[in-house]
Length: 272
Image 1 (cartoon, rainbow, N blue to C red):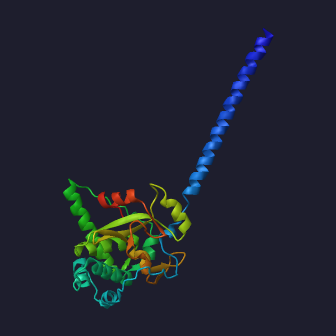
Image 2 (image 1 turned 90 degrees about the vertical axis):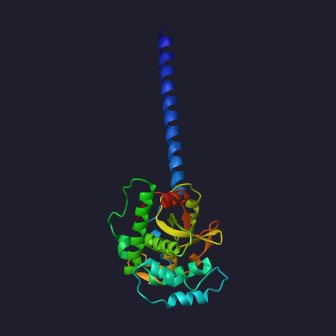
C-alpha cells in the first residue's frame, strides 16, 4: 500500500514536471517568434515618412527633358483650378510622357512640403455616406478636386496633397494615374525587410502613372526637396531620381503595400 502511494505521488509529480516543462518550452518558442517578428518589422518614426536626406539623388534617366522642364518652369501664373493648370502645362505636347514630365516639374518646383500640417494632430480621416457606387464616385471626385484646388491656392502639401494634385492634373490631361501607398524611409535596409511582407502599416503616398502601356512610379513629394530632421523647415532641392521608376523596381527608399494601394484607389477616401 505504502509503495503504491509513493508510486502514485511520483507519477503525479512527474506529470506536473512535464506540464511545467512544456509550458516553459512553449513560452520560449513564443518569445523567439516575437523577437523574430520584431526583427523583420523594424520600427519607424513619424519623420521617416518625410525625406530628410539633403543629398541629391542621381538622375538615372538618359532622356533629355530640358525643353519640357524649361517650359514648365516658365509658367508663373497663380492658378485656382486644376483644369486651367493642366491645360497650360500640357497644351504644347502630344505624348503622355511629355505631359507627365511637365506636370511633375511644375509640382516639384511650385509646391512646398507643409511642415506645420505634418505636425498637426487633427483627425484627417474622411468618410462619405452614399446611396450607391455612382454616388460614392461623384463625392470622391468632388472631394479630390476640391483638395487639389486647396493645394494650388496654398502652394503647400504633405505627401497626400502632392499625390492628389498630381493625380488630378493627370486625369484632366487624359492620363491614367493611381495613388500608391506604402512605407518610406532613408533607412534602406529596414525598407528592404518591410518590402518582403504582404501587409504592413503605411506612412506615405505617391503616384503610379500609365505611359505607353507601362506603369511607372512617381513621387513628387520626395522629388521636390527635403526637410530638416525635426521636419520644421523645408528645403527645395529637385531630386530627379523619383521620376518614372518601373513598377518592378520602385525606389530603394520605398516599399509599396499593394493591398492598401488597391484599397486606397477603390474604397472610401482616407486622407493622412
